[in-house]
Length: 235
Image (cartoon, rainbow, N blue to C red; front, side, top):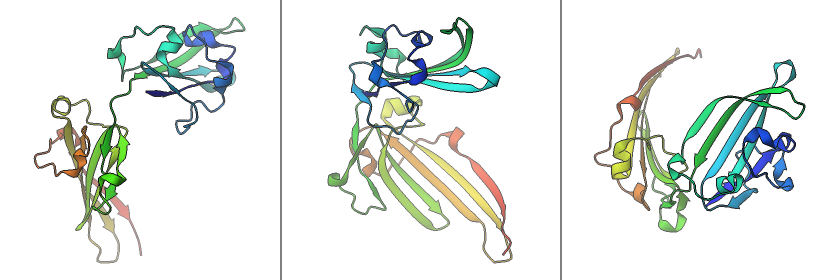
């Protein structure tokens, strides 16, 4: 697995604030460690990735965000880790003494993750060029249907996340669907009526599983939402 590997420059002389016994190499400290879009600073790891964010209150109440991202076994100096901590987050207030011997209060957010097996998924819109030769690779496959009035759009692709992953049924069957139904009210002098919107998002965890129709999807009550948004549109 690969983990983003970097640390904020502000931690170079204040590494003790992180609680990690192993310090990053000098060339891994930079000003853009908090940028999730960076792809040029990944390291091959054998255990979990870790992301640590410290929000430290500076002078005049200003907050500074400092980051550490990397391979957890390297930062801890050992490989005997509890894999049950993968995909967990912890957040809260912590206190340290800084390099100038002053008390430092910070809000710390730390998350752990491991590299679940990746799957190959169909990657297409409305069935056009929908073949295995154009597949994408991700953590999950997803198939979404969006119906706006009478116009339907079907998107099949891969996804880095699944909001339905905590469901017991998702873990048991490897797939789950969520539904949304809404209505957009448009007030105008024209004869345009309400816009009816409905969608279905189905996530699954095996190769090319988003190529099938989910005949008996799992209905998630908490995600069945009827939303009415009123817009004023004077023509």
